[in-house]
Image (cartoon, rainbow, N blue to C red; front, top):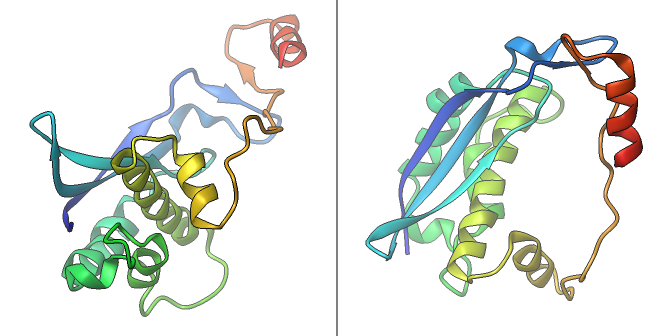
Length: 170
C-alpha cells in the first residue's frame, strides 16, 4: 500500500459560535484527505481528518511544507510491519526540519495528518478509528468512554436560555 495523494482544503465552521473571548464566525479548519492506492467499491480508500477548531486552517503549513515531505518519502518508509500506514512515521516525516516545541498552528497541521492516517487504517480494517488506535497501543477497545463536551458557546441571535438549555442537555 502507498499514499497516492494528500489533499487539504480550508473549510468554514458552520453556525457562527462564539465564547466570551473569541467569535469563531470567520474561523476555518483544514480538512485533510490521505488517499491510498487501495481501491474499494471502485474508489480509493482515503483517511480524512480535520485539525483544531478555534483557530484558522493551516493550509500554508500543510501545502508548502508537510504534504510535500510526506509525498516525497519512499512509500515503504511510511508503512508499519503489517503494511499499513504508520502514523508515527508519517508524523516524523511531516515534521522533519521543523523546529521542536510550541507553535500551535504547526501542531494542529501535523495532528490533521496523523489523524488522517488513523482514519485510513481504520477504514482498511473496517472498524472505527478508536478501535484501531486502541489495538495499535495494545489495548482492548472500550465499549464506552467518558467524554468532555464543550459548552457555553453563544450563537448570534440565540437567547441565553437557549445556550443554557443546550449545555444542560449534554
